[in-house]
Length: 181
Image 1 (cartoon, rainbow, N blue to C red):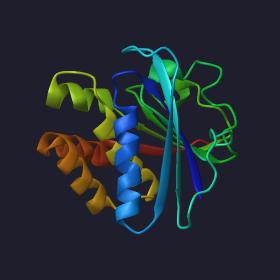
Image 2 (tube, rainbow, N blue to C red):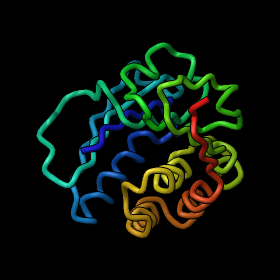
Image 3 (cartoon, one colour):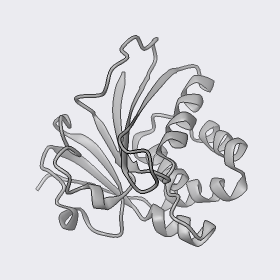
Image 4 (cartoon, helix red, strand yellow):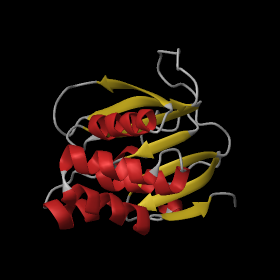
């Protein structure tokens, strides 16, 4: 089972992105679970959620305390002390940013860092900052945890063709690097 924590801001589509990942995993014959966590429920407030994917039924129903993967939908959240809490050694971090990994001060326990300008993709296609589908494209490429074709079908079914375009852009525009110095 893979445990993933998502960090974003209200209105960026963290919950919908997670629901699409779970549906894609289930449609492919696997298992998935998402537990959202909302602090102050207003647009722009920090939000996070816990996502689990696996090949067997998932019985654990708690927060993710030791994620193998972090999806960070807003690079202003990288400086919060809790963002990297519990990240497993050699974990993967996918960040929505224009900055480099060194500018973001990614911690040394991250083995792989992937950066995609999901906000730029979103602004270009929709005129507003809703980076979730571009982040899903990056997630699919970096992790291979979901079937790409099923994910695209789910995105198209839920949001339409433009969001499919955003996911494809995220898939092809993500840059992946080892974080070992």
